[in-house]
Structure formats: C-alpha cells, structure tokens
Length: 125
Image (cartoon, rainbow, N blue to C red; front, side):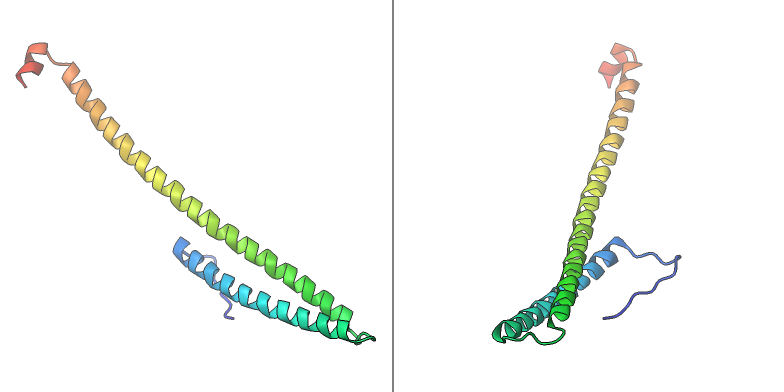
C-alpha cells in the first residue's frame, strides 16, 4: 500500500480525503478478512490437536490485537466519511441561508424605498 507523505503547505481537498479514506476502507476490509481467516485456521489447528503448537497462543493474541486495530481504523474511517457528509450538508445549508439573506436584504431595501415616497407617487408607479 502506498504511503502518502505531504509537506505542511500541501492541503488535500475534501474530495481527495474522502477518496483516500474509501481506498483505505477497502484495504482494511481485505486485511480484516485475511486476519479472520488466519485466526480461524490457527484456532482450528489448535483445537484439532491435543498438544498446542508452540507459540500458537502468542500468534492468536497478536492476530486478535491486530484485528482490534483494524476494526478501530475502520471505525475511524467511517467517522471521517460521516463527518465529510455532515460538513457538506452544513455548507449547503449555509449557502442557502446566504441566498435567503441576500433576497431579504433586497426586499427590505425595496420596501424602504417604497415607504419613503408619497402615497400618490407610489400609486403612480
């Protein structure tokens, strides 16, 4: 898997972060499947024998810890995706509110412009 090294001046866009996160999720899911298969195979071999293979307990412990770390990474990646979606929705709402404020300002100016005139002048228009 490629490692991404960036200087402080380089900044990823939100889309680049989401794409990278999705790629990481795919890699972690594959790795999780491989670890689960290895752990199941190891436990099956240990259960089938009366004497445990030397180091089998240690290997199963390492695999379990590794699986926990993978699950944590997957959870964090899901949080990043959810946060990105939320930020997109907030930005969209912010844009809608800006448009509404502009429209209300224009309407207010129009109303103030009409209120300062004579009623006869307003009626003529």
